[in-house]
Every structure is written in C-alpha cells, then in structure tokens.
Amino acid sequence: MTTLINIGLMIYFALVAFIGTLGNGIILLAYGNRWNSSKSTSVIFILILACVDLWTCLVVVPTIAIMEYREFEVPTPLCRFYSFSKILIIISSLIMSFIALDRFLNIAVPHYRLLNPRRVKVSNNNDD
Image (cartoon, rainbow, N blue to C red; front, side, top):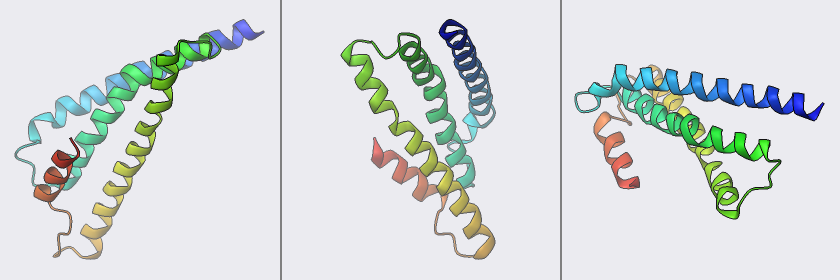
C-alpha cells in the first residue's frame, strides 16, 4: 500500500513541477520584456512572483519529492535546503499580499500612488 501511495505522490509532485514550470515560464516570456518600461506596479509584482514560483517548481518541489520518496532519510544538506526553502512560501504570500494592496490602493485612492513602479523596483533591488 505504501508503494502505491508513493507512486501517487511522485505523480502529483511531477505534475505540480511540470505545470508550475510551464505556467511561470509562459508568464516570464509574456511579461519579461516589460520590466524596464513598465508603468504598472502589478506587472513588476507579477514578474517577481513568477520568478519565485519558477524556482519553487524547478528546485523545491523536486527536493520535496526526493525527501518524501526516501521517507526523509536524506543527507543533512538536503534536509537543511528543504527547511530553508519553506521561506519561499512566505515570500510568495507576501508578494501576493502586495499585489492585493496595490490593487486596493488603485481603487480606493486612484490619484495617490503610494506604490509606484520606481519605488517597487528600488525596494526589490535593495533586497539583493
């Protein structure tokens, strides 16, 4: 029975990684050339979110799949990377919260732009 569950779990992780990589890759291709010329903070936030989620689908999801397959009996560096990679979930949530805040502010106070593209790009570059 556990073998059947492992196979189902691996199929699930493979589907999540494949569909997520494909979707975020398409978003990066569609919006990628708009980074410098963007007049919208939403486009910038969407690009940042797509990058974080692409990394998650390419690296983190396969790592989780390996750990599940080996029942968490993995080398220490892989276990530490797994623990560290949980931060990406928090980062994605924060970015989505900023997208929601940006959209709310554009509706509630359309003439006052608290989050403008220049401020968003500067705050993103300071994180590096």
